[in-house]
Picture (tube, helix red, strand yellow):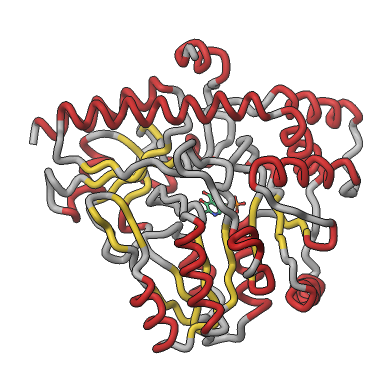
Amino acid sequence: MDFEKFCRENCVERRGTGTLKWDSLQEIFGDADLLPLWVADMEIQSPAAVREALTKRVEHGVFGYGKVEDSYYDAFFAWQKKHHGMDLAKENVRFATGVVGSLYAAVRAYTKEDASVIICPPVYYPFYDAILNTGRKLVTCDLDNHEGHYSLDLEKFEKEIADNNVEMFILCSPHNPVCRVWTEEELDGMLDVCRRHGVLVVSDEIHQDFAYEENPFTSSAVVKGGKYRDMLIILNAGSKTFNLAGLIHSHVIIYDKKLMETYDAYIKSIGSPEVNLMGITGVEAAYRGGEEWFANVKALIRHNYDYMKQEFARELPKIVVTPLEGTYLSWIDLRGYMEGDKVAEFIQNKCRLACDVGEWFSFTGHGFVRINLATDTKNIKTAVERIITNIKAL
Ligand SMILES: Cc1ncc(COP(=O)(O)O)c(C=O)c1O
């Protein structure tokens, strides 16, 4: 694939278009003049099929309440079946206005105040918020880092659960930011511990489609033939896959009837809206006509990752780049060249990059930087050059 050509034809200028990533730099980083590689969306235009479907909607010119038609379910179910072996029926699915909102909803619907909820840092920071902002008790079990490859120590995990009377586990699968695609065996281990301790599992699978060939993604729903379905709340969306986060549309998947009743009752109690008209229009079109686009985007991400990894290996071999099994967010350890607590300042003020840094994902996570690879290769080259030049100048 000609990646330069793909970027020329598909990447667009976003600064000045009202975007969080490019237009909030002053508010978030205190500096508008940085190259943004932070929040997880892309500079790549969504698939043509999506743009055409949305244009048709806009030209129709009426934006009344939406309805999820059978055609939406058909497209969504076909994608999940083909790519993830998931069997779904309408009664297993609810719609929401984003996965983060559903994390809060799940915590509130299934646990009481002061209940303990466990997460495995370093992990996507809204997981902390969904626990702490709802008045629940945060329990953590840090992943183990072996030269950039992360794993979960099940004994430690079980001890935290037992000692803290944990009621819920928020699983990140694939795991942002450490690029892990958990294997079926690993998931079986985690879910088995949860089963034995009566812990409900919220499985955030928003990155489900970003798993690279040698590390196929397994949904918690299909582990060991669906053995754990009765204790799962699965959250996924087309928003990462097709770069549609601003359409605010996602899925909640619950197989167990009682769990679904509890969820429905909670949603009723807060009067939450169910669907976003543009969301259902765009996501259905993406599942129907976005497959080739998606394959190209995945190849570009892999290309950007390989480029970055090779450059660092050649120029700065003490940088540890975590193997990219999943997601499009690279996780990089700079502690070989500076104290961990200097990294955030170095990345922003010396390299002039806006990135998520380690301490956002873990209280003890200093020293790491997360780089969003789903962008024009030019941006990755600029970032890599700046990091190399500035480290060499230290
Ligand atoms: C693990 C994970 N969950 C959820 C989200 C955001 O989901 P949403 O935009 O649907 O709230 C992200 C975005 O980066 C993510 O990485």
